[in-house]
Image (tube, rainbow, N blue to C red; front, side, top):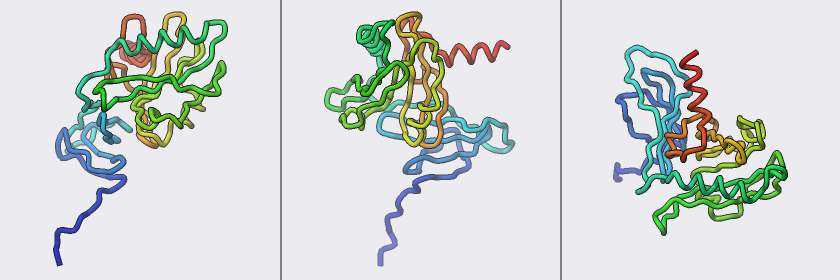
Length: 219
């Protein structure tokens, strides 16, 4: 009998860091205990992530690198966000605002990043993505607009986004001093991330996570 039996990867892994850049081996995601805390890590076709769940110094273990590593041939262009902003401004006026969902995905045939509006059942404070679209399955980043002044992800957003592995974003105040906030969903974890990890932002769109991090650092 052959000893070369196929051993499928674990769905959820638990590891201790051996180096700064240990390969991700679990099929869904894995927890990695490192010298600078506990991390959740996962990978998909477009990117891999290593995100802090708990930050704490643990003597004797190697520190883990934090961030997102993109595997697509080209980066997401800053103009893509300008196109989405312009679409949201033209679709609904400031006095008749309705939320909208945008799916950002890597088009493998064209070798380029593309986006599609996909909101349905939209009103002033809620919307839902049309999950019957093929772009929804391919979606890497799911962005939706928020009404003026709604600067944070809502409890409804949390419920909708838990259990998925993709990047989420909200675009706020689209008609006046637009702002954006990103987070990465790794199944049961929703971790805030800076916009710079995703893409260069066009002039005129403020990254709220970056501003809040600077304020916290200076306080």
